[in-house]
Length: 164
Image 1 (cartoon, helix red, strand yellow):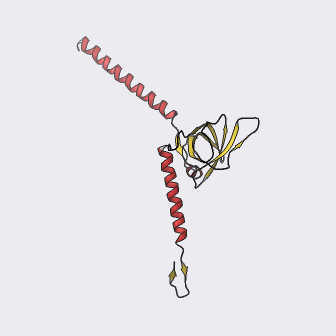
Image 2 (tube, rainbow, N blue to C red):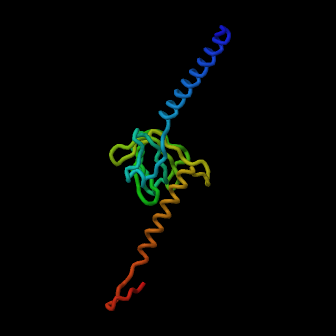
Image 3 (tube, rainbow, N blue to C red):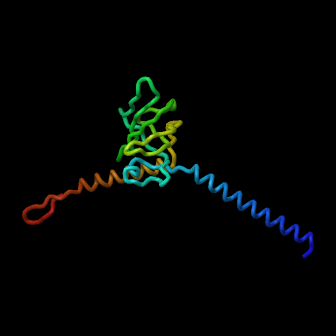
């Protein structure tokens, strides 16, 4: 084989090997930093990522915020209007954080309590992450379906006729 051709072949092979190594490192780095958004209903159903870290999204339940005196610890409840999850956060809350507003927290679960490392509040009146909006719509539809099933109870008469 010609020395020039051999050198080109090695250059191409090393370039491809370097590109493959870079792609593997980028993929591993992105997987390590990935966190999933879940709702309180999914948490209580046990549908959480295996690595333990995830984002919990929902609405801060009314009258649930409790601040510890002398520290930055805050306890509150996140709800998707079907289920509730207690959250503990130690740090300064965002200015937009308040009861009845959408929030996303990132952290891990300890028993039945979510320990948040980060709290993010919505920025304007209409913003909700797409995943959170879908989850809230699903929860609302599920609740409405359950209520519709409850309304369709039948009363049986002694002759066997059903009365709605």
